[in-house]
Length: 253
Image (cartoon, rainbow, N blue to C red; front, side, top):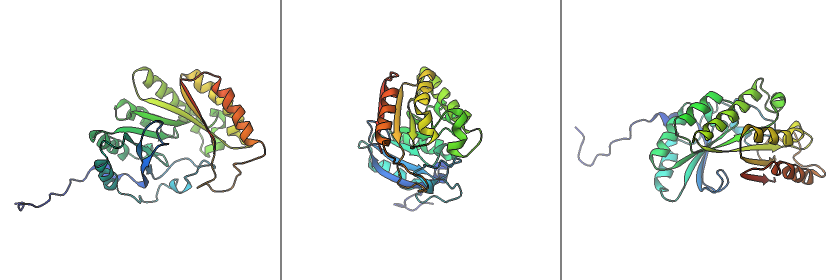
C-alpha cells in the first residue's frame, strides 16, 4: 500500500529513449516567427561535408540530455513558448520521435521538425499522424548531385521524395513547410542553387530559404568564404526570389 504523501514515480515513457545531444531552452531562429525550445537529436545517416553539427552525426553516441529534462522545461514554460522543434542530426532516425512529439502536443505545444530528407516514409507517416505542425526540409542539390554532398548513394531520390510528400500533404491541409538550400563557395551546392530553387518551386513549394554555410562546428576542411562570395550569393538570392514565393528568406553566414 502506498503511504500517504508518497510521490508516485512517473511511468516510463517511450519518449524517454530519445537520444538527445542538446537542448536550447529558447530559440527565435529555428521556426520562423515562433518562440520555441529546440531539441537536438543525436545521429544522422548522412555525412554532409559542410555540416555545422558534426558531433551529432555518429549514431552510437549516447544522448547527453534526458527527455525528462525537456519535459520539465516544457511544463515550466507553458504559455511562454509557442512550441518545440526537433532537429539534429536527423530526428526522423529515431522511433521515439513520434512519442516525444505526442507528449509535446499533449502539453499544448506546437511541434516543428527539421529534416534532411533521409527518411521519406517516416516523414510521410509522421505528417499523416497529425503530430507535426511545421517542417523545415533541406534540399541540398539536384538529385543527380546529392551523393557528392551527403556521401551516400540514393540520397537525392529520398530527399526529393520528401518534398513531394510535403507538397501533397500541404495541399490536403497538412503542415506548413519551408525548403532550405545551403550553399558553399566553389561547390556543386552553389552551382545547383538556382536550378534547385526553380525545381522546388515547380514542385509546388511556396516557402523557401537560401542560406550560406557557416564554419562553426564543421570539420574545417573547406572554405565558407571566397572573393566575391557574398555578392555571388546575393545574385543567387535575387534570381531565386524572382521565381515568386509566398515567402522567401536569404540567410547570410
